[in-house]
Length: 456
Image (cartoon, rainbow, N blue to C red; front, side, top):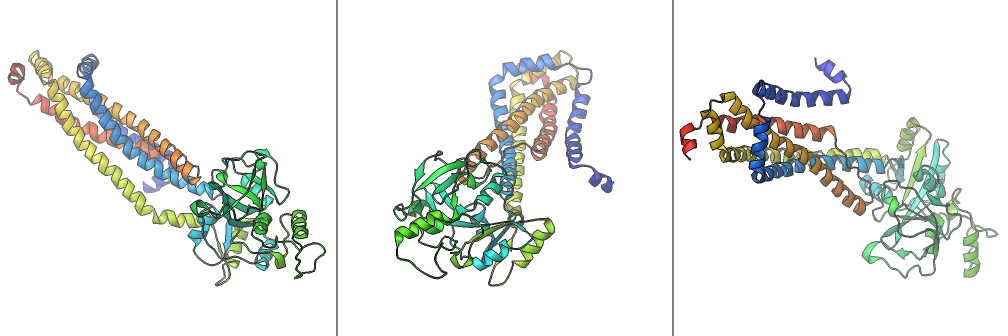
């Protein structure tokens, strides 16, 4: 039997679980309502006590929304962060923390990291299994936008096609803006040294860059970045630009700054870099020509005291494993909130049924069958609980959507806000338990003495 269950598609399993949760409610409704039509009376009772009923429904909706929002947001966080790392197959850095370097390379979190030299980059780039090797350079910014140096090849790879506007940078003083960067095409800016409140806006006063293109939306923090040739980052810090100067022997220096600036502006962009003039890079993004080659490259470039190669997706998977406790805690919070709501529902239903106890006693005095009175009370409770559950499902999605927009704006990671089977199962399970609890005040209403209720 278990083999049959596990052999079903995931969608079929979820649908069957939903049916298992809804089925008992339908059976209960069929047993109670068979042969009766309490709709008109229930509608009149809802209108007569509309304010208490409305408040009760909103309380139920709020509690359900909390559970739905927690589960939906946790799933959206996982999906968004995983999607942001899709363009980074392998990252090679100096030995250290994989998490720290993943946050720096993929999510552009500022960090101090040792540099890989030109010989290391050349060996990686010349490997026949490598289809893309792009150095990265961080540390500068403009306003709230981080400045990242890399190659045009990597910008095209991250964009998954052509740019959304303008063209790719073709000179050292040109830049491509991320999809959500504030600078328009044609804007000129001077980068600041550092990121955040401690950035020095005067350190690179001699540098002026022009935005010539804009990337499409990638759903990553790179959407808010300004991307420039890595040569420009090296040059504004007074370093070599990765290419041997024309007409100058290796190791020869010049004190002619104007001549040096002219050579910089005329130097080529991107690969191949000259290892002797390669200032260093904290991270190299590598793409291999196949899955087997990716694992082989990760193994080859994981060397003690030299380099560290890792899959950002694998690092995220480890973080998700560590976050399993957080997910369990969030699920426990959701369940506890639902349990508290269930208790509140039971108390609230007793209070609500007490409001129309005299009307129920009158029905019984007129000869209404006990099952009809039970059906009326249960149907009244079912309408309130059902409306509260549906409103809670919608409210939880709305809360998750709003929170996802806030987190996306702060982190740069596009976080999806969707309803999944987990949320539907949560609401269906709550409805099942609450509607079974609703039988308690319904039965309690039948046990009340008729004459005492009529006299009251």
